[in-house]
Image (cartoon, rainbow, N blue to C red):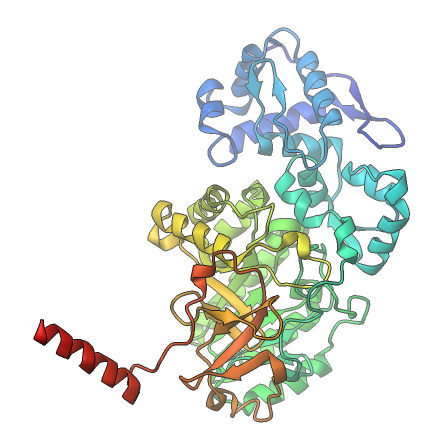
Amino acid sequence: MKNNNTGTISVKFKNARQRRNVSIEALESKIIEFLEHYNSYPLVTEKFKKEIKGSSGRSRLTSLLEKTGFANNPQGFYREMVSRLEQAVNGEGTPVRVGNITIPYHFLLSVLEVLIPGRGFKTIRTVEQLQELTNIKVPDNERAQMEKIMDIYPVRLSFHTIRQMRLSAGISRQYAPFAGELDKEGEVHTWVGQFFRGIVEQMYRNRVIFIMNMACPVYCRFCFRKHKECRNQNPPTQSHVRQAVAYIKEAPDIKEIVLTGGDPFMNKATLRFAIQELAKIPHVKTLRLATRAISYYPDLFLRDDDSWLRYLIRLNLEMVNRGKRIEVATHFVHPDEISKESLDIISQLVKNGIPVYVQTPFIAGCNNDWHVMRDLFSRLRSAGAEMHYIFLPTSPIQGNKAYWAPLSEGIDVYRNLRMYLSDRAMPHLTTATCIGKLDWNTSGWAVERHEKDPRYVWLRTPYDPDYYMPFAPIMQVSRRTRINDEGTYDASFMSEIGDENLLVGQRVLSSSPEAFESRLARTAENIEY
């Protein structure tokens, strides 16, 4: 290939106010880098890998130019590809083809790093900003409504996510504001409030949540904390941590701490202090650090010479020497979120002995398809991640109705995953009720519709009143729970059931006199027969 990479390309995306010139040399260098280091599944398709030959990034680029008909005109190839990206419709997910070759999604993301440069994140305050940065077209008659939505539910995106949104419908659906967010149907909160103790939230005997930060770098539109009013509050301080640590010291049943938020890694000094103090408590054995930044803001871990990654690796060695461990909890919803950066972060953590586990909400129009879920979990498994939960359904929060899916739909998807995923890639199918999680068809199931409000379903949980006595003796659950014949709580949950066969009804205690008499009668009938 002739090295003809001088000059610039003029780029103007839809809704952009002005053109900008991009260096062809920088564009070519980024493409060669991608083809050198990332030309393998899942970052490119097997078909692309077979078609594009070569042992180096440059030789593969030569092959790509030949296959697309631009062997003697590399600048023509770059201009054609950029032109296709300029016209790409946000969230449509239409493949970009040059010649007879479909250019892989992650290849195009690398190109967009040159065309739409930027690290960090940005709060979007106006419709004009929204349209220019994300390529979302807001009709004139919806602009006032969209401005109101953005004022109530702020839009904050990383540049990493902005680039993904331009190519992937699965990404755009998670972060793009939409008219239905003003719908009041649903809950404001989905948990029982009296479990809060300052920055500590306790819903289980053996583990608690530490709220280490009030904000996230990026705001998901389906977030179960969508209505939190604390986004603009100051983050917790070391003084708050001392009060919370004092509580943990007096609660020997607590073995695990989940440090979360918001994103705890955005409150750097306080997070490090909390880890330092919690590690000193003998009965605390595991620290679970929860962040979604691995998927939507990997720069958080990779900036400053991978400072957070290096810190976690050192911390893990110190914790192991104390007989303790750290884990990283993260959050992926769609396969298109699995970028080369996120794969690198997961692989580095796992390689250094830090488990990474994944939680996934079940979202209509995004991942409520078993093929999508299979690809998501298979790719994460290949990087060494462990699958933890599918949250079914996504939280029934006001403004989130567009994301709700029936319970039966999620259970059908899960059945297919059981057939097509490795055992080690199977997550728990879980519903987070107001008093704690249940796993479907093991620790809980759908009992019946709520007798007074058909929008709700009674779900069986494994929890009984005695369970809460040590840490929530005056728990007030009012209409949201009831005691069943087995002595555990049923919890009401707002959801469509879908298939009515899921409603199994009240179950009689297997050890009750009624159950004994029933079994005795059936046995007598069999003997007589």
